Length: 99
Image 1 (cartoon, rainbow, N blue to C red):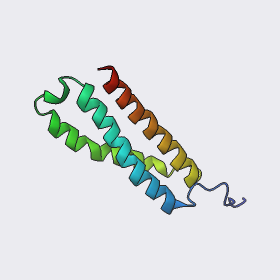
Image 2 (image 1 turned 60 degrees about the vertical axis):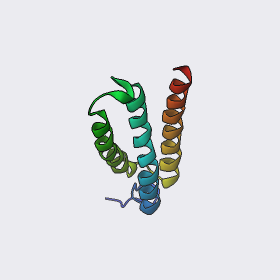
Image 3 (image 1 turned 90 degrees about the vertical axis):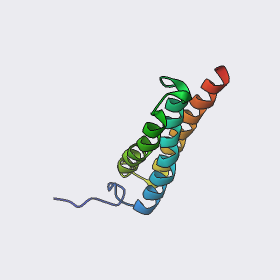
Image 4 (image 1 turned 180 degrees about the vertical axis):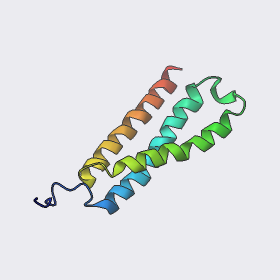
C-alpha cells in the first residue's frame, strides 16, 4: 500500500481554501439572496421576505465553505469561486438592467 503524494492529497493549502471559502462564499451567498430578494415572488415588498433573506445567507455561505475543501488546490478554489461570483453578480446586474 503506497502513501499519497502531496499532489494527490486534497488537504494541502487549507488556510487559503478556508480564506477563499469564507470570503467568496459569503459574497456568493449575498449574490444569490440579492437575486431572490429582487426578483423572487413579491419582489422587495413581500411580507416576511426580509427575515427569510436575512437568515438564508448563513446556510448558503456555510454550504459553499464546506465544499471548498474538496478542491485539489487553493488556486482552483479561488478561481472557481471567483468565477461563480462573477456569474451570479453578472446575472443580478443583467436582470436589474432589463427590469
